[in-house]
Structures are given as C-alpha cells and as structure tokens.
Length: 96
Image (cartoon, rainbow, N blue to C red; front, side, top):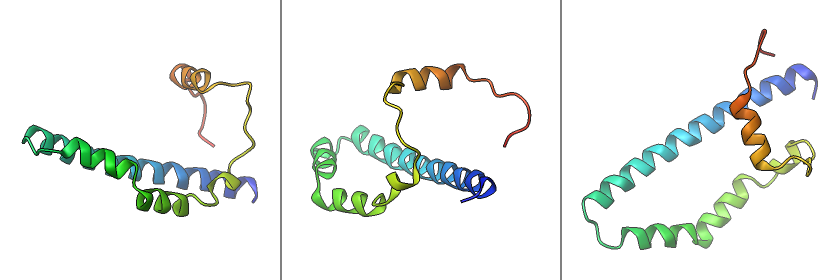
C-alpha cells in the first residue's frame, strides 16, 4: 500500500468510525427512552446482549483481520498518554 492509499484508507476508517459511533448514539438514545418509560428488565436485557455469544461471534467476524491492518503497538505509550496527546493536539498546516 503506497502513501496515497494509506491516507485514503485512514480517511475511510475514520468515516466508518464516525458512522458506527452515530449508530451507537441512536441506539443509546432509544435505550434511554425505554429506561425513562419504565420498561422493566431493560438493564438486564442490555447486559444479556453484552454477554451474548451471537454478539461476540458477529463482532469477531466483523473485526477478524482488523489487527493486521494496524501498525505494531508501542507498549511504551499508555492509552491515557495517547488520550492526553489527542486533547492537546493542535494540527497546523495542510492536512495529509
């Protein structure tokens, strides 16, 4: 994969993340409405879904080869350090 393809692939992945996040927000909003409506057992249903083998199987299939696309991990940088970096980051110049 050349540099141009890498940039486009990163943009593609970023857009996919945005779409997934939007969909999650929609589901979260519906769940909040159900909770407010006093639907009994909604928390239990949600926990059952989180632990579902069907959900896990779909997740595993969806991300089966995802790790292969990522660069190697740098264990010296913690997740918190990366979150802090992202919060402080102020890009300059033209985007790649």
